[in-house]
Length: 600
Ligand code: GCB
Image 1 (cartoon, helix red, strand yellow):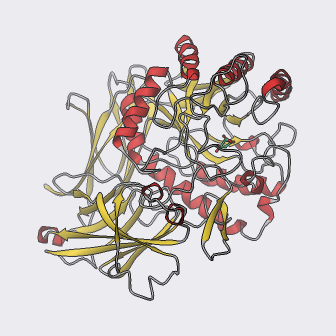
Image 2 (image 1 turned 135 degrees about the vertical axis):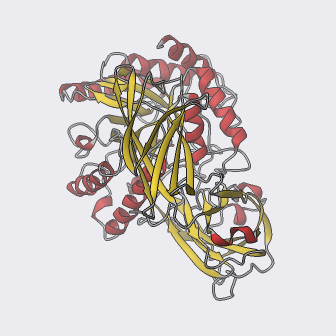
């Protein structure tokens, strides 16, 4: 059980939510002296820093861009006297990767993990009718106990440097919106919904979690704001007759309004959009509302010029427009849960999401791409750090499922990306993760994880945990690229036939396949890195996918070029985007558009 409410902030007659985004104060703390020197009260000699944003790409020196260690944020907020009888929380969409939150100098919350909300109860520390100081001490070091996994090295000049076991740049900071929330002492802490379709009608099972005993009501309103169902009690079921279902590309959202009552007097109110739909794995099919859907789309990143991983509505809007134009219906939140606004918009647009926990880098050799995929075994799940890693993994899974469970767009949970899966230890580890996750989702959505090349059918000990299997495969890129693509095709076919021979009778989705491609590079005949090669590679992959009826989806890697750690495998970032980093199409975008439109 989480000891804080993850509900997205809203304002109504019982609650107020004030957005604290804007220019904050900021300071690096390479010597880790901030706490002793009292920075939790006020930052000495701060610089300015936009929130939300990653701090790295604002700077013009490498020392600042690549900073690894402790860093601090501060803002001042006037808290009105009218809020005196309310409970107050400061809520960060995320702070990467760990944080302590201070209110007027007092520690109010600590949090591990950089991609899920940090909520601090500050009621006992704020001064009503006055300006209050909120300070955050954050840290972006990587290790093998936290998610995502990596290491931190110390350079000869004493500076720390992040060494991720993954390729995306270790963007850090307050990367999502911050809210000051005022709500009643007795309040709605969480709610969940689940659906059953019954002919033209739908039964909505609901549960409302409060921290008190007063009477609770639940109402549903349609898009014309007409009430379509009402019930009382913290747990119950309502029937919506002639229900409008939420469908792929055709979203329909009802408004759920929950209230706590003391007789006729309102104590608390919370409302949220919900979409009535079912998700089921039926044999080899992924079914939404009982109908098979083939997943078409992308693995993405939260990544853009200048703001790094910072949330931005404009980037979100452009990404959805590009995804609709190309005929996509799905994306995976590789490799961490995204800002909540992504899910809200996917709910509105009828997009499907595979929601991924930040369990990436659970194989030491992935820090060196030349090693990854070679079968080199690194005993990742046999080290003394594993119990703490598992604890943090379970916490992230719980926070993700609690946060995202009511989004109709979320159709599956991805509980890892490319870990070692061939040892008994990995099997034990992931069995614990899957068992915990299954107990958390009121909608019992399918659970999966993305497997890399070493997780071959005859070796992998973890695919058995999945309701459908996600494969990340690079035959024709990391394996037998360029002139060897004919052999890549053969090797790919051999692997696919091995999966086929297992007769698993469950769907497979390709969650990664792609080639690095320079947006300006053309070559006839093609060579690797040219636009022509990306197209040939995609055609080869599609020809294989289409031979196996259990392949029920293709999420190409990646939606757009993105920033990575520097190295010999990357040219100012990963260039596997179908769009470049500023969201203009490469030639492959037209290949995908043609195929995906024809698959409708
Ligand atoms: C992978 C990883 C992804 C990388 C990608 C690549 O297997 O899951 O994070 O970006 O390969 O391009 O190498």
